[in-house]
Image (cartoon, one colour):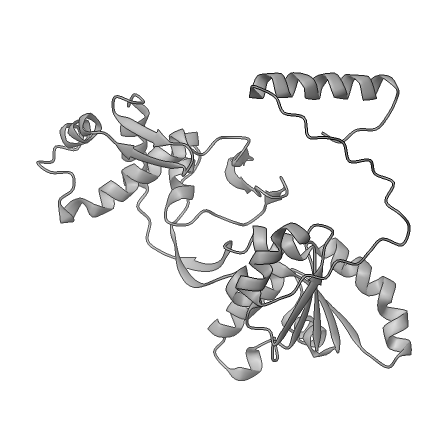
Amino acid sequence: AVHVVTVNDYLARRDAETNRPLFEFLGLTVGVNVPGMSPEEKRAAYAADITYATNSELGFDYLRDNLAHAPQERFQKDLYYALVDEVDSILIDEARTPLIISGQAEKSTVLYQRADMFVKGLKEEEDYTIDLTSKTISLTDEGINKAEQTFRLPNLYDVDNAALVHHIDQALRANYIMLRDIDYVVDEGKVKIVDGFTGRIMEGRRYSDGLHQAIEAKEGVEVENESKTMATITYQNYFRMYNKLSGMTGTAKTEEEEFREIYNMNVVAIPTNRPIQRVDGQDLIYPSLRSKFRAVVKDIKQRHEVGQPILV
């Protein structure tokens, strides 16, 4: 069976319907695997010769198969051949994105709220430092002293206080690194993750390791139960299990090295049908970010005035 992988379920449905008449004329069966299907519908989709699906649904089905109680409850057959649309986006940009299936764990709301109140009273540089490039944040010696006074502890980093240290670390990240309306939004009293790649809201997804609860405490919404990871895999590890892996994209030439090293895949550039009409000018280099954005605004204005549509 061939799995044709697209980035969203609209494309999976559309492409399957567009190509179905041709494949069926050739005697092949076509299935579509998208979220929200019943187990019977899913099994039928995987039983087809060609199955259209999204990368996340394939990965989650693999995880569900590994949590199944009996062989007949599983969906996927052998992972033989995957054909991936926008292959660099899925195999390179999102390679390390973990797919996680989680179950309920115990509730520990009070500690999140106490850690949040403590962290909100700290000052940057004096009590904590942020390394913006790696998005890490840590308490200074002064911050550690304050924590020991607040929580009445002789030594914050005593083994017995590991849980508290973890909660303080996550509260620091939630308050000073995770930005509202950029990394997440608050909608109907719930904290929802924004996908950094597409800008879309990822319904039903939660940050792991207590970070989601720390953001809920920060925003003053209900802190939901913690969850514990039951199964996880990255896209990179999932797609490397296919016997054959291929894909298409307009932007793979720049990632040729990574494709070869990580997936043992060669990049083949297919020439355009007609000569390229694009004119490649010289690079423009600006002394500062401010001057660069000023030039961008000027360019947008000029294009807007002549009625040219422009995507910013």
